[in-house]
Length: 157
Image 1 (tube, rainbow, N blue to C red):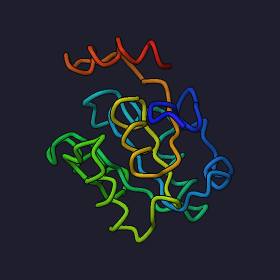
Image 2: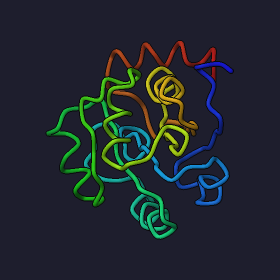
Image 3: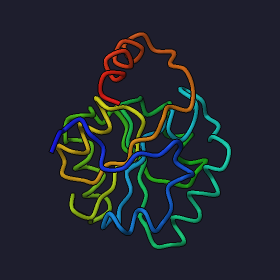
């Protein structure tokens, strides 16, 4: 098992169904924000994301946004979606994953991680012991460091 290989791959988050999450054994879904739920840095969810979140919640899943970004970036976005959040999570380190898991009461074996970055979301989710769903980024990166990581991701994707 490679720590850099997702268990599942999808074009975008709204392509992932409740059945997909159930087949992964998930009860808790940890969601990356930037370029997964919204364009990088945007306070507006991508098309279909609010409806997708409501559908997944109706199916009984707990959802938490987990982001390396600041509280001032994530809090208003998470509130708009009605979701709890963990900010400055230090992905790929397990700290933020554990915090989100403890908030929800579910362990790694009951957790799915959904994100667009291999070196943060996939690696962090794998280290934590969750099933990992990789999506394509919603748009271009604006952060210099992420642009560099994307160049290396091309060899893995």
